[in-house]
Amino acid sequence: MTGKAKPKKHTAKEIAAKVDAATTNRGGGKAGLADRSGKEKGGHAKLECPHCKITAPDVKSMQIHHDSRHPKIPFEESRLVNLHAALAPETSKLRPGVRGSFKK
Image (cartoon, rainbow, N blue to C red):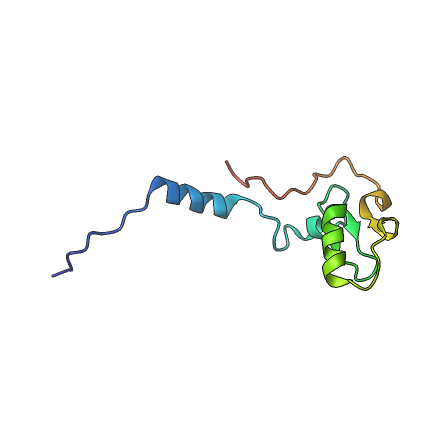
């Protein structure tokens, strides 16, 4: 004879959360590599640190990185490498995105 506990049922909210987690591109793995590296224009990695070559999406994030990783070197916004300016835009190619569903 089985125990007295009732079988657990999944709620609609829990099932929807699992489907969302499985089908939404969060920008990780091979799919988000181009987006994180800034190789293609339109990626979220816009600026590159001149000291350690790490990328960041904006100046504020780069300043936070610089203050924590390079505290002895003064922060100069002019020394940052703009990856979007260095690469020509290719309009025929889809732009990488973090949020978006693989299937609806």
